[in-house]
Length: 71
Image 1 (cartoon, helix red, strand yellow):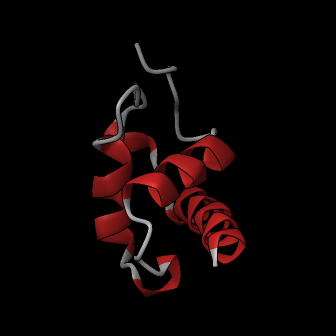
Image 2: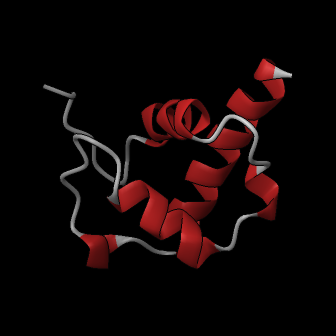
């Protein structure tokens, strides 16, 4: 069973997104799409209505760090 993650787990979410979308540059993703990607991750238990721009930006930056490391 996947580990439960919430909106505040930006580093774990970034890792999972990089694994799921290895060829996708996170800086090209709209926040509406990012929100969808996060809520569809295995183990995500956060309330979809509880995200905001700051949370999504933190997730995007965590994902971007993983993306850069994978290059």
